[in-house]
Structures are given as structure tokens and as C-alpha cells.
Length: 367
Image (cartoon, rainbow, N blue to C red; front, side, top):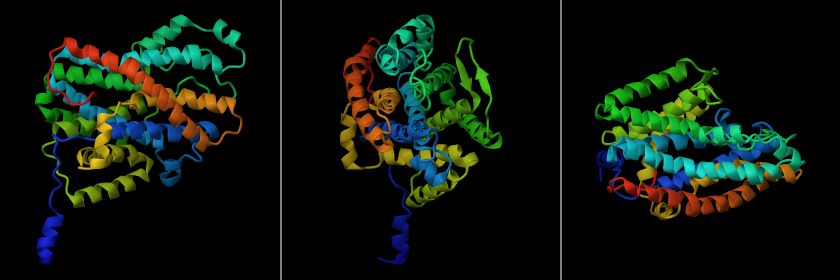
């Protein structure tokens, strides 16, 4: 074989077959575990001094990396869900069933079980419990509102991981709004919004201001709002333009190099993660990796692990003086995995079965 023929074969595009089994379940599980890995160090130390990815690049933590991955996947899959059944009420009903039941049950468990375990005087905890504010916060997808817990420890809040769920739901509503206006029939408009958000996140970095929304305690931080919506819409672009995205070995290598370069600079880290990280993620999600196929047949534990990881970590640190981040990490993955397994079989899967009232169509795995 001549050198020219060999070079031609190396530069052939990698064929991504969107019809064969994907690895979304595997990556969601990995991202949920990475959040626990990241938080184990931050919660013990009170800062990111030993957080693994921060030590390498000095910008994103593994927790931020994982949340970025979640929103990229979500943008892809939620727009796919709308495209497969573009009806407003069924779409909103599905999104409600995926988010609210498990979130509400976790909030109640945090308030009634984990909360009393995170204080020294339980009678004072119950005396200070404000049930109206708790219910209002829960129904607006806020972090669990309880009396002070884990007093004296770092990040003394009941569940500091829940904050992203509100942004996730906002993105769902954004898709519904765009779908009703038939904007997905003109994907160039979605691409224009995406490019604008990426450019804005670079030009106006950092974006620290808080944005109040609908009163109550329902607020969004502008930096998180721009960051997470940017990631979501980029994921949507990878779906809307999936037939045009070419995966060549040289492009994949270039994307990896550019991602590493962007991760070294705080201004470029999130845009780099969105564009180059997204390119690599969706290539791997559909790559033929037989060993990962079995994950698609397993229960989707990622949401439960994400919801229960933080309070379990906090309880371990609160009750076991001097516990190492590594032990916190291992024990939390095991315990959160157990709670997630129960949540999937008792709450999430039965809730998702209620989608059957809408017209059935061939759909991909639960998103």
C-alpha cells in the first residue's frame, strides 16, 4: 500500500450511526460520579486546593466538568424528544415526570431524615422548621430549605447539588417555547442564538450579577444562567445539525488539543468545553465501543446519584472527624448508588410509566 493510500484511509471520516445503541447512560453515570469525586475534596477542605481537575488546569473542577456534560447531553436529548413528539402538553408532562417526582421525594428525605442527622439538637431543628417555605422552595425546584444544618463544617447547606435542577427545567421550558414557535424548522436561528451565547460568555467574562426571576426566592445567577444555557443550546446544535457534523480522526485529535488548551484559561474553559468537549462527547456517545453497550440496558441511576450524593457526603464528614476525601468518595458512591437504585425502581421508573397517556411513538431511551 502506498503512502498516499494510507494517508487517505487515515483521514476518512468516522461514521457515526445514529441508529445503533448509544452510550448516553454510561456518560450520565460517569458525570454523576464525577460530581461526587469533586465534592469529596471541596467539602472536606473547604476549598478546591486538592480537587483533582482543578490541580491540573486551575480552571474547571470535575464537578463543573460533569455538570457541563449533563447539560450538553440534555440539550441534545431534549430537543430530540420534542422533535419525535412535537406537542406541548405531552412534552411538558414528560419533563415533569422526569424531574419532579424524584426531586420532591429527595427533598422530603433530606428534610425529614438527613436534616435531623445533621444537627446536634434535633428539637431545635423541628422548632425552627418552616414548612411553608420548604414546600414553596421544593415546588420551584430550589435547594432544600431547612433550618441550619452541618453547622461548623464547610459549605453548611443541606443539598448544594440541587441548584442546577432549576436551570435544567428552565432549559426545558425554553425548548417548549421554541418548539411552539416552530423554530426547530429553521435550525439556523438556534445556531445564531448559540453563537451569540458563546461570544457573550467570552467577551463579558466574568458575569457575576444575580438575576431575579418571578419573585420569591426563585432567582438565577447570571453567570450560571449564561453558562448552562450555552451548554444546553450547543448540545441542541449537535442534534439539529447531526447529519452535517463530520468526525474524522484528525478533527477528533484537534478537538482534544483545543479542549486542553481552553481548559488552561478561565475565560475560554466553558466555551471550549461546550464546543470541543461537546464534539468529543457526541463522537464517543455513538462510537462503537461494545463494552459500553451493556450500560444502556442498566437502570439510569445518574439522577438519583446526583441528588443524594451531597447530603450523604455532608453526613459522613459531619459525623466522622478527620475522614479523608478518598474515603468520603468511596462510601458516598456506594451509598448514593443504593439510594439511586431505590429511587429509580420506586419513584422514577413508575413515574415515567405515566407517560403512556400520550400517543405512543418509537422513542429512544428515557431522557
